Image (tube, rainbow, N blue to C red; front, side, top):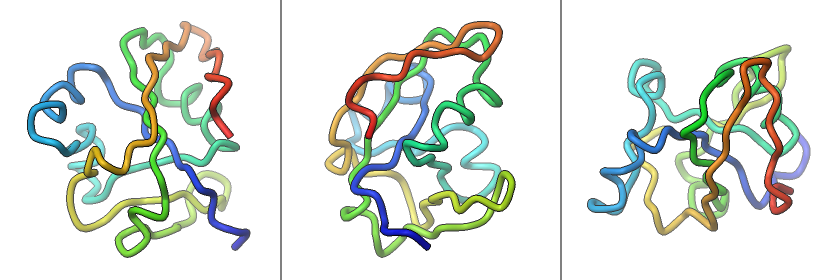
Length: 119
């Protein structure tokens, strides 16, 4: 596996993320609960994840998360096309691990302008 990136990215709906602001951690999207782990993407995987899974969603938040804060519970597993995707096991995402957040939307065709800070 190549070097672990400093940041990985979580896509959340504003509604699913709202309770996190009060409790200090994010429990994830419904798919995270169903799968038993929290899905993340690297910067290189982000545009395709948005295109495939979030077409037509206008009320999204992009969370940039420090991998160093999660290393003990972060597992890199093969998914789309054999690429290794970061998955968080062992509980919710502490908001102290979020470097920044930004609203994001995806049009009906799956196009999206990523924030300049995505690296």
